[in-house]
Each structure stands twice: as C-alpha cells, then as structure tokens.
Amino acid sequence: MPAPTVTKNASLSCIISGYDGSGFTISWSATTPDVSWVDISTSSSFTSYYHKAISPGATSTDGTLFNGYVGVSGPLKFSPGTTYYVRLYNGCAACARASTAFTSPTWCLPDSLSFSCGNSGSQVTFSWNAVAGADNYYVLVPYPGTQYTAGNVTSYVFPVTPGETYSSWAVQACKDGNCSGPVLGNSFSCPPAPCPGTGHTYANPSGSVGACGASFGVNPGEANQYTIGTCPAGKHWTRDPGPGLSYDKWCKTNVNSTRGYCHKCDPDTSAWIQIERGDVHSNTGINAPGGP
Image (cartoon, rainbow, N blue to C red; front, side, top):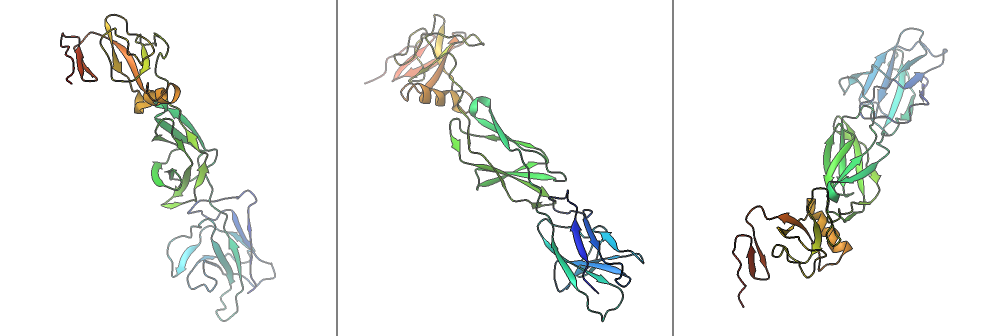
C-alpha cells in the first residue's frame, strides 16, 4: 500500500495535550486499492498503534475516532510536538505498507503576560491570556524556581518584598497533568508605599500624621530629633510600618537609613508605654529614666 498524505489545517498553529485530531486530514489517491483501515502510531515500526475503519471508496479521513488496537487502549489523543506515523491497510497482511511521518503542532502557550503591584508594594498580581482547553496553570517565581499552582485561572497573587527586584517569572499552561514549556515574563519590582505625611505635619485621609524617624517613638508631643514633624498635643508617635514593612522600606530608600522607620501620631485615647534608649514613657504617668 502506498503511503498516505497528511495535512494540517492552516489555522491549526498549536494544540494542547489531549487534542482530538480534528484538524488533521489523512488522504490517499483514488487509484489506491480500497482502504479498510488507517493506522496511527508513535513508532515507525508500528509495534503498537491505533486504527480506524474506513468506508469503501473513501479517499480521506480526519484524525478523530482512532481507537487503540495493538499495545494501546482507548481513543487516540494527540500530544503537542510529537512525531506520528500513518499507514493504510486493505486487508492484505502480506502486502508492504508504506507510512508517512508527521509532527503535531507545538503547545499553545499563554501570552500577553503582565503584572501589577498592590498592597503597598508587598504583593504582585501576575496575569496572562487563557489557553483554550487548558485546565491548570503553573506560575514560577523566580524563574527558574518554585512552581506554584494557580488553577484554571488567568491571574495569580504572589507576596513580594517591597523594592526588591525579581529577575524573571514564568507561566505554564497544563491539560490533564501535562504542561507546556514556561513562558517568561519581564523582571519586576514593586516600589514601597510612602510613609504617610513625610513633611513637617501632614494629615493623611484618616486624620493622623506620620513621618520617617529613627526609633520606636517618644513622649506625646515631643519631637524625635531625627523625625521630620512634631506630634501635636494629645497625640504620640507610634510605629506605622505598613503592609509588609513597606513604609519603613520607603523611609530607608527615600529619606535615609537613620530615619528608616515610619511613624504616625496617634491620639492619647488608651494607655501606652514606649521605651526610648532605655527611658520608659507612657501616658499614664509612668515615666522613668533608663539606667547607666
């Protein structure tokens, strides 16, 4: 039997694991003796193969509905980027049967990778376009590195250190436990959110004030010598590190390492105790100097 011809639909540029073969056309000349079966195998020697019955007089068929016959079971599901061999059979077991080799299209890959920073620079959201038929995605941060399961979604939230640069990340599309190669995203960094009110006495939307200072805090209304700004009467400095210590990171980067801690002025509505270089301060009358 002569070898058949295998063509792929022009629109079929990629597939995912478990493809049904509908975009493949297997054809042969009308002068070919009546074809009873078409066999498909991943082995050129056809030690195992799938086959499909052909109606009398037919000169073509598609890649669907091939069932396991020798050494394999179940319907044939094509894998991306795999070489297959196809041959014809007309009932003559002694007749020579030539085969044609063809390679299936490669994996369909997620594209349009992007990222956005949130939560004051302490998290990033990775996004990508869906791959038709995929049932899971893996996100790798950094790449190469740890593989995180995203599920059947097109975005994934990941915690990061504000201000740190990550050289790369990647996404894989998967189907039935088989996955594409990684698609790399660009390097990224999520800048830390600024310490609220880094001027002399700036009010933020919640009505408190804050500044970059050198230590945990001082007496109510007393200005820290390294802090820009002064707490007004009835308020005291408290630490305000922000999500993921983002505010502190901003102070260290944009002010200096000495004033590397974000503070805010909180009302004296509850008891507090703070220790400053060995001195104890509170708004309940407990004030004691430190020892030698």
